Length: 175
Image (cartoon, rainbow, N blue to C red; front, side, top):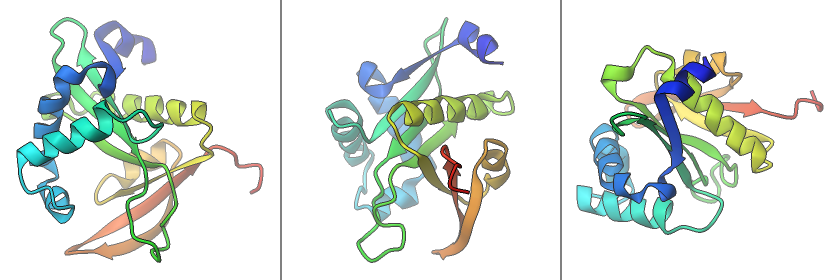
């Protein structure tokens, strides 16, 4: 499957392709507006500035965002990222970095295995960066992540819905 994707698509860190920051920000803001508002980012312009600061100008290891582009058209197809945990001290997940984030595939490309491919790529990068595990939370894609090796840690009430907190461990020698 990997060779099929590499024939059609190219994958980049967003900081390598800053010309996509506005499009990515627009997609994210429309998809996850409630989360942006919870973090005080009330406008698309604020979301763009946040993305520029975190994904383009940031020289640190995290956060980082990968984008998948169509090789021929250079259209944005999908995104995925690794983030620093952003919960408050006292939260049981404080200091549990990295977190998988921004897993998004444009609707017209869904059902083709692109999310699975992107998850594999970001997990490979996490291993290269010497992380021994990666966390995530999801409302609706638990099955997708279980197929990639994630296990359910717990289900929590978050606002009006439940979220599943999951983790994948790369070093299972202690189990």
